[in-house]
Each structure stands twice: as structure tokens, then as C-alpha cells.
Image 1: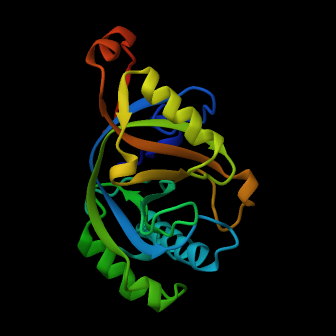
Image 2: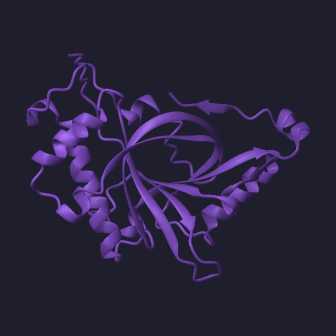
Image 3: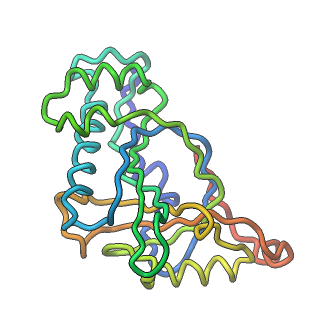
Length: 224
């Protein structure tokens, strides 16, 4: 077993930005996640959202402590649990739109679908109605613009305004209105007050003005 710890906080600092003023661009390849879906808002007062988040946290913690939980994981390497993130899609239009979300926590490649299934049979502190809906997903975020934020994210909030300004100024256009947007929660959303959440907002993007894109020459943070 490799004893060197994987730690997203230090290994991938640029990808998990805390900069609330300046946007940045990431290009993230296919990775694997444990996922759990729901409908509603990302709000500490939304009990269904926090219950689903808590269930996913507990499963992720169990997997990260694999050897201590007698999980036989070939090639296991100690790692810090990755942050919770959610892919959001609008279900209904308008200011009071309803949103569908997919909660996600990234897993290293050595945590396989079979390991997850084994863990689900052993975990006892997670509501069964959530536990059996948790599955493994391989997903690529692709090319995105992102910006940091403190507090609960809103599609009408200042973080989104700053992000859209950054995207347009860099010569890109946002794809969020046509598909989904991504939110990351660097703090535990169950045990941290909403106004203290350190969050990241991401929009998928594509070049709109190639000349401007080339002139700006913004670096692209490559994921692994």
C-alpha cells in the first residue's frame, strides 16, 4: 500500500479555488464519483438536501477509511475525502424555478463499483432509503469557468454575476442555461452554517470570440 496521502487541498489548489473576485478556467477529464440525486435547493434548512448530503458524506468517509473498515482495496492509498459537489439542472422555468440536483463526491480510481457495493452492505449508520440509491458514476465536467464564493449560491447572486462577466470578458459563452451548472461545497454543508459555506460556482463554457480568447491568453487549469 502506498502510504503517501492524496490531498486535494494541497495537490489541486488551483482547481478548488477560494478566489471570490477573479474567475479561472479548468478543464476536467472523466473521473469517478459516488452520487445521490434529489430535487430542491442547496439550503441548510432543506432537510432532504442535508440528509442526502450527510448520507453521501458517511459513505465517502467509510470508503476513505477502507482498510480500517476491513475493505480489501487493491492499490489503496490514503486520501482526504474530496469535497461535496452538485450538478444542478432547472426543472421548471422562472424566478421560482424548481431544481434537480445530483450530489457527487469524487473517488480515486482504486475505489471501484464493487468496493462501493461491499461497503453498502456493511454500513449501518446511513438511512437505507438513501444508501441503496447511491451509485458510482464516471463523468467529465470538461471545460468550465469557475469562481469562489462565501455563503449559499444563487443563480441571481453576485457570484454568478461576476462569473458571467469573467466568461464574456475572456471570449467565451456560458452553457449553463442550456444544460447544467456545478456547485462545490468546500465545507461540510450539514455541520456548517450556510453563510459560512466556502463554495465554488462552475459553468461549462465554449469559445464565442476566438480572437479574444487568444488575445486574453488565460491559463487553463488541467485536471487529472
